[in-house]
Length: 201
Image (cartoon, rainbow, N blue to C red; front, top):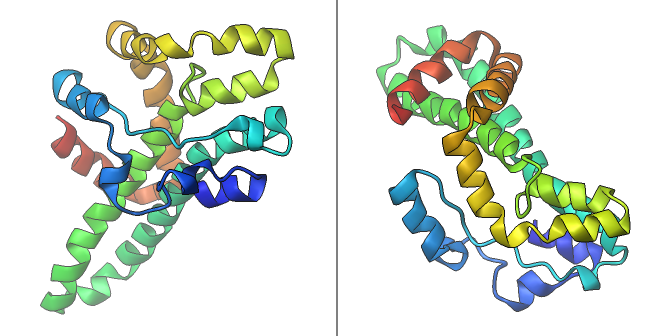
């Protein structure tokens, strides 16, 4: 994401030391605490100064869409790798060492499909500061975009209300998540649901 911003003309992430794989640099204390309190949290958003972008209104859409697109790509790659492993799994079953290696890898890939698809869909909820909200702001005409962006300070509270006090997950996110898993993982969908059902219950 940060390198993508550099190509669009903004070096804010680099200047703030966020071009790193060190998770502590991206940790948000309040967001982490909220994970334990209410089961939903967040990391620090990627710092962006939209004034530095070559075409701020248009490039905002690309910046916001990069996160969900990356999550979907990771889910697709994980599903492909899972399909390949499970296809050749019978041939490896006679080798205990291979099975000891491939079994946990299969579980990690299955969970990667689930969590990346979930993050992709969740971040597309059209409420700023989520990516979906920023895409909406980029698409709307200037006056409407400015008015819509003013809800961002209250965005996380709106999202918490939507998740915990409405049926948005049951009626919107869950069906789309199920469709995505079945399309990407095919016959391995059962493995993913068995794994995530155990880990997330």
